[in-house]
Amino acid sequence: MASGRLSVVVTRRLPDVVETRLMELFDVKLRSDDTPMSREELAEAMREADVLIPTLNDRIDNGLIGQAGPQLRLIANYGAGVDHIDVATARQRGIQVTNTPGVLTDDTADMAMALILAVTRRIPEGLAAMQGGNWDGWAPTSFLGGRVAGRRLGILGMGRIGQAVARRARAFGMQVHYHNRNRLRAEIEDGLEATYWESLDQMVARMDVLSINCPHTPSTFHLMNARRLKLMKPSAVIVNTSRGEVIDENALTRQLKAGQLAGAGLDVYEHGSQANPDLRSMPNVVMLPHMGSATVEGRVEMGQKVMLNVKTFADGHRPPDLVLQALD
Image (cartoon, rainbow, N blue to C red):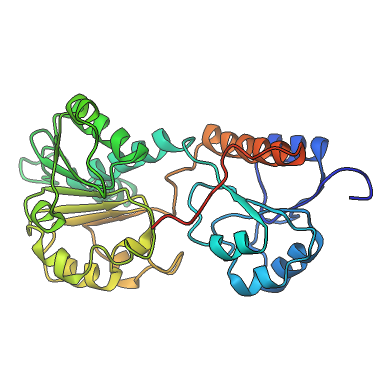
């Protein structure tokens, strides 16, 4: 801090307006290209910086935190999820961790609804036929999908995003059901016209569509395992805009290949960008490259949250989005 300003390292390219403002406020080292940092580059950044601004691609484990310099006092994550950061070890080392909750609620809920429609109405199949020049004209039995109105939607995880999905689903005439670690307050539940299921097993066995909206934690890893996936109706559809690790991807692939699930809409994958290759060839599987938060407005608002957290920290106050512990 020779210049009197915090030394900040950003691990990925951010929207121009965010990078410009960061340079105005802090002594910032920006990423010149949009590739993830190597582990060695992350370790060097943590040895030099007062503040690290990582993204979900950067695994900040206890080994890296152990290499951090004594001046590193804040990891201001660009994103809501912090399962890639060893929050407990960071706190033991006196390093605060912040995130950007709330700003991507509507964007992610929009994408969940888009995937529900895409799978049930076979939109990608129609798109492929048109783009490939393989459409010979309308026919009474071609590209038959299913009506979403009246279908039972089960929401796994009824936080901000789950509730936003519920509001959208009700507008489409779907029946909303949910399983959550804690039941919602009666007034919220009534407002969403949502039915609570204490038993996840019983809920998934009765749903037409299942939307995954819970975070990845040790308790939610493979929450949708092979046994639970087999409980779902063969006519059911599963959609995931949360974290890929919540679903056993290999078990899901087997269910789909066996015709024991009608389809899947996936924006996230268990092993990051390395999705099960068998999923790519299935016409009833809609796969997106983690686009749930990919709006200009959302990404800029994430940056604004990061800057507010860093500026508040620099002023000697508690950052507003301080993560006290990893979710469990």
